[in-house]
Amino acid sequence: MGLLFITAAPATADDPCGPSWRGQLGTVYAHWNTWDVAHYPTPIAPDSWNSNPELTTSPYADADGAGWKGYKLGRYEVVGLTADNQLGFYMPNFDENEHKEVWIQVTYNNGTTGEHPEFTVNTGEEVRMTDPSLKYSKVWADGWITDAWSFELWPNPEWEVIGLNFSSYGGGGGNTWVDQVVIDTWCTTNNVPEPTTISLLGLGVLSLIRRKRRA
Image 1: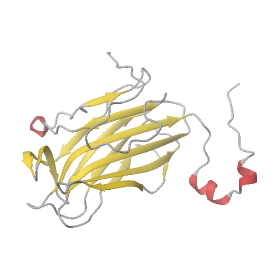
Image 2: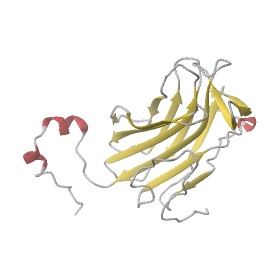
Image 3: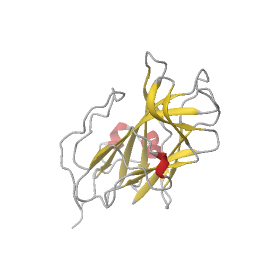
C-alpha cells in the first residue's frame, strides 16, 4: 500500500479555518471537492488525504441518492442533497486510544433557508458523542456558506461513518447543494475525561487525573 507522508495537509479555497492540530501524529485529513457520483455506488475517494501506516483504509463518501451538477449556482462539480438522502464518510481510526476529536468543514448553498448541516455518526459500537459545536461560519461573495463544526467521541471507535444531511429543502430545485467537505480527525492517546465527567469535577480533582500506562 502506498502512503503519503506529509507534515501538514494543503490548504484549499474554502478551507479558511482548519484545526490547529492538523498534520500532527495521529491525525487524518480528507478533502472532497469533486463529486463524481456517475460512478455510484463506487466509493468516492477524497481529492486529497494524508495518514500514516496505522490506517487500514482511506475515507470515502457514499452519495446515496444525491444529484450531481457540473455547474450550479456559480460553482463547478457540486452535489445536491434532498431531505431524504445524505453523504456518508467512512473514517478509519488508530487503535488503543481513549478519545477522538472530529472537525468537519462544509461549503454549501441552501438558498435563504438559513439551515445548517446536520450530522449523524455510526460506529458499530457504543460510544459517547458530544453535540456538534459550530466553530466558524462564513458567507462567501457568491452566496455559498462555509461552516466548521467539531465534536468528540469517547472511547475512540475502530471506525465511524459520518453522515452529512439537511433536514429541509433549499437552494432552488429542491436541493441543498454541497461544494466541498473537509474532515480532520485526531485520535489522541491522552486520557481525556468524558464530557459528563468534566462538568462534574472541579479543577482540583481534574489535576489528579493521570493517564494509566501499561506495564
